[in-house]
Amino acid sequence: MNIHKTEAIVLKKMDFRDTSLIVTLFTKEYGKIKAIVKGVKKEGMFELAYFEVLNHLDIVFYEKKKTELHLLSESYLINSMTGVRNSFQRISLAYYLVELIDVLYEPHQISHFVFDSLQKTLKQMEGDGYIFWVALLELQLLNESGLMPRIDSCVKCSGSELQDYFWSSKQGGLLCESCAKSSDGNYQVSKSVFDQLAKIKNLLTVSDYDGDPLEGCKDVSSFVTIEKLNRDFINYRLDRPLKSSSFIDGIQTFKAAHQ
Image (cartoon, rainbow, N blue to C red):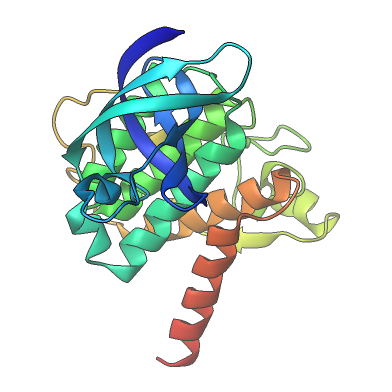
């Protein structure tokens, strides 16, 4: 068995027998892995708290060649994302992001860029303007997975000189007014949303930003709409809607009904 050391973010965990866990981790150097953590649920084992979903860890694991279930031998907590966990909205979106990565990435599919972006996004979600970072990571994941929606011209006629803007997850992105009339399941979106989408698109392959990408942005509310467009598009492209996404929609519906 080979021994590996790497950073990891906890995507999922499940009980295994009486005292152990099976954890799904997105690692920087080895992609998505599953590992068994033996004996961690024994009384007095404080390391159990390390394996909460979202936690950022340093780990050492033994790679097993004949199975996808490896053996985790050491773990050290780097960041427990406390600021994210203090907000119901933040933690709901954070759980959605890690569920999305779990669904999109195959075992041992490596992406240093996505790992760094996820880590940065979770840290940024502890502060204000976090919807921007969620929307950016969604688009980065779509871009890297080859599922990027078309946002710079009409997906049906390729027209780019638009007076009105419509969105269709079914068609694959932006529609002009004429094409929207002949297509079902679309809805109108403001020009400012697509202006912000275009700005975000320029950041998709940037992992380290000079300055604050939100500086000078006056229409922060656009990012809420963009995140919803992204999530609708993602759910349409997946075999089944993500559980966390359906949960977020339920929260938003409840809040709207009680405002």
